[in-house]
Length: 282
Image 1: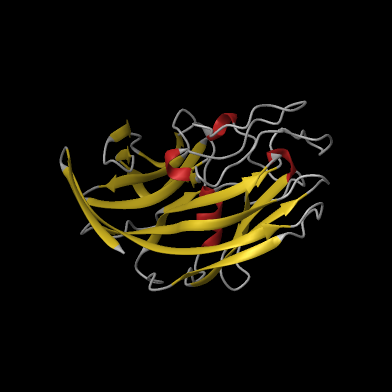
Image 2: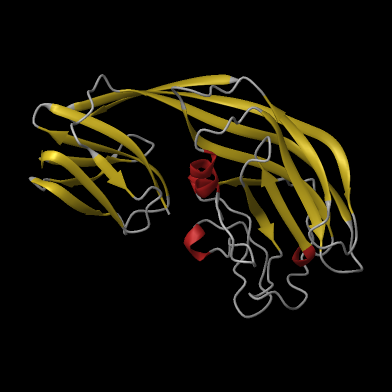
């Protein structure tokens, strides 16, 4: 575990983020059974010591080491402890929706582990489209086919973080790899799973009647308060102000559609009282 303390001076607004990284791994090599769609083998990564109150999950990252000779065959999922929410990490790259065809024929080699990290938009799913495409590490999840083929959700790490809610991240995280076609096999292990938490020390009071929705947000974030909202500032995880608004109204639809996907802090001021909330932008 390591602790990183970042202190940002943001105009007249200063806050401190204490970020702590909790790690786990499982280096046991697990075989990927051939042609068993959705019924592959799993490995467990035990996480412990992650706070369950007063601290929110800022980011989840995973390094995967996979050997397989046809990446379009494989489905990789990660599930939170105790039957918690799960997402698809790799969903048969190159296979269109609805699923049909062989998908991408590229090899995966465990000598170059794949790192998946939604906060940095470094995802491991190629654009499916109408047919096979090259397997790539996407740099922007807006152009990545990251949705399960059955249309279920959550679909991204950002969704997973929100879906965890009050769930306990401590315990065994389950990583499963299955193969969906005959003729190619492989194995995998997990060099590292990281859960990054943060405590935001703001020294602020709660605004009377303040509500915000939806979270996560795709386009407009609705902000409401009992009295007129005078100032709104949006900060990214580097502490940089990326948006500013002065609505002077009790209700405001903040257009966040131009922001990249990821986590942001939204500071709202009413009179001499301010409150900051963490928002996930899809």
